[in-house]
Image (cartoon, rainbow, N blue to C red; front, top):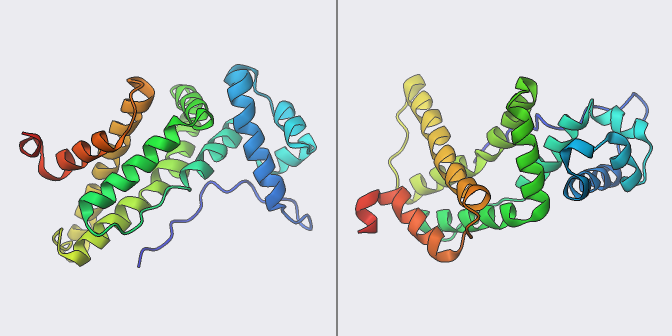
Length: 215
């Protein structure tokens, strides 16, 4: 059973006695992504988002300190849509999540918001750390689940016991995530090429067997 990672990106808690509204949160995050597509990062303001969401600007500031935090959370909830259904074998599982990831990045709202916050984070250490905790660390859950499932099927060896084994497993999870996410982001956002079934199949083969498998 995979432990659910803590949601380190939840908007700030509201004032005592003021219940949070999930409907308002969704409206705000949806409005944030739509505004980014329409006006871009430079012209995006908390007031613009509040007007689009139909809420007071103070409502935003009770939840997020600034637009950096708001945009990261607006992106993070999209990545939370990613799932890893059991497709019977590790290769098929990888192909499935790669196709989901590629389809998510092909959406204008995801592409625009992600590229905006990544660009801004090059000069903002706090924003970069928020991206790491909100998106990167949270989505490593997919790698954790995939490895555990493959180990249960006997497709991957079990982790070594003890502290060293846990450390090695953590490093492997991080590397696997970096390879998969890096390849898909480069494919979609840098090369502007589609992540289609043929590419996903070749990528999964490369990940599992190395260059020999593509010969």
